Image 1 (cartoon, helix red, strand yellow):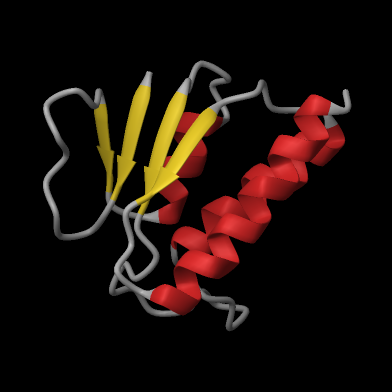
Image 2 (cartoon, one colour; image 1 turned 30 degrees about the vertical axis):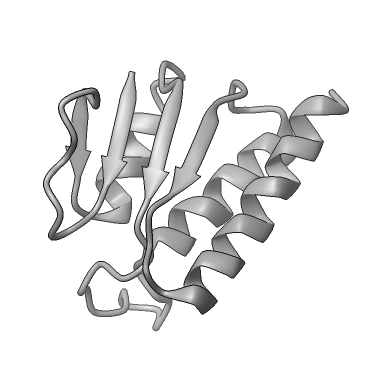
Length: 104
């Protein structure tokens, strides 16, 4: 399954699902059948009740944590965000996930 996370840009035809929130993306990732995900950083959402941001970085951190715990199958990823700071943060988390998967 290919997942596109973006609140504005429509998913390309080669993607199966268009998630518009981190929660939707994580719900799909929890199935364990996501093979590829492309992330946008800025999703135009307010923080959650705990003051935590809701962005593509939220998903990247979740992927990193689950890869570390060995609870998420290896997947491929890309980042299509125009936000350079957000892109760097997501890339760092996802490269860590790659390291965890490769060392498992």
